[in-house]
Length: 332
Image 1 (cartoon, rainbow, N blue to C red):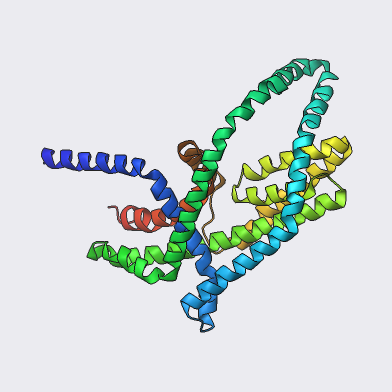
Image 2: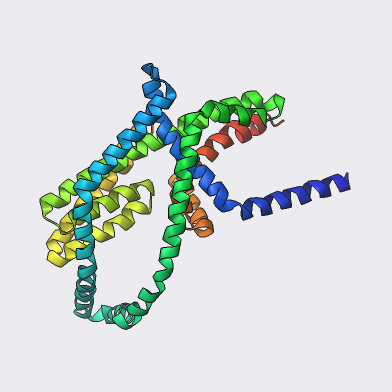
């Protein structure tokens, strides 16, 4: 019995080390699963109308390509212009913050720290280190291509992949595995659809509000706010810093107006929009979402932060179906 326990323990250690060594491969695989589920949502709707799956997949990919091309033509030139403006305005923002802090005697120490941290003598050497970002960007591009290719292959024949997973499951647990796969697919698809609609709504409302207030870099700020909606708790708060900084260049009054706008939109998204859109899927607790983002961010960096919530959605369904119902509820 001791030898058997030792063998099981060694097996677990080896599997843990193997998973850690293959973490980037597993991350790419899970990213492909998330993208495949996102593609499968419109494909299933087309299949209900009698379309064959390969044709539905081709139509969805073509629609994404045309929509992406249209968005690029309409928004990218303006975004490039605003990004260049942002680079020129950053020193102005820092200078204005230093002036405001220097005018307050109790904040002079903070102003001196800000001057030392953001002096150009300290910032310029960082520019030479940014050359390494090119290698990381190339690696990220390769990973995105692999995720896209794997997602297309999965969504082309999801039934075969489903049968493979069920066949690899012991016979007594196959019915549980079928139910688990169906519920994970439903929860992940609903979460992706709900968060996409929520992020799009936040982007459009933020863009409209900033444009009406005549705030600088309205499109770029709205795009950042929309994208960071996928990172609950810390994302919307971090996204607010950009429009606030740009509004500070105009006047403190505009900064207060932008702050009120963002607080209103954050509460609308957090307490009304997201609960309505996700009422039929998994409702993630803010503490669980934040801890998952911090943990995977520390282990895997930015890709871990982006894929933390989809992974938590899947794990929460798995915990409910396997750990709670199959183990805890039957504990005597």
